[in-house]
Amino acid sequence: MTVAVLTNECQRGAIGDRALWPALAESAGPMIPALARLVDAARTRRIPVVHYIVVRPEGPSGSPMNAPLFRVANRDVGCRVGTPQAELVPELGPAPTDRVISKHHGIVSLASSGVHETLREFGVDEIVLTGVSANLAIPSLAFEAVGLAYRVTVPRDAIAGVPSAYAEEMLKHTLSLIATVTTVDDVIARWQLDGNEVR
Image (cartoon, rainbow, N blue to C red; front, side):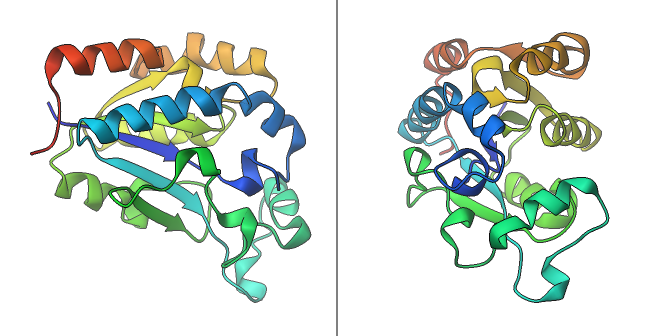
């Protein structure tokens, strides 16, 4: 089994100092150091780290308005190309060995964004899914990943949602049905036992 870590929207404009959703940034505060520890451990073992970020292009086409979510996402220029909001939170890098893949429309899609192709290039069959939010993107990505025949692992301390109690309910009642719910420490301990790395 070959594993990769996938972070979703761990950007300054989502959970960092330029956050468009202050409540989400507050909820994600404890997640960031745990996730930083996870990606550092992955890099040490040459396990692929893929950052899936949202970057909106300039111009009217870069501001979708077909969902209430986007009205907030487009506020204060949103996560536009070249803005600080589009950058990863500094605790996560990216490291030179990481892959950063941008989505330009919609909410999530492994298949149409290049994430799926990148994971297959690495020979990955298990995704350690992390980031935000447990409200929407994390379950959507988990369902799609399972549909694409990946095994999915979700470290409960490496995702966040609003309110925090809802993230726990999502883990308990939904994600646990399609993914292995665990912790960052348990994932790292398993890697140490398995010697899992890409050669």
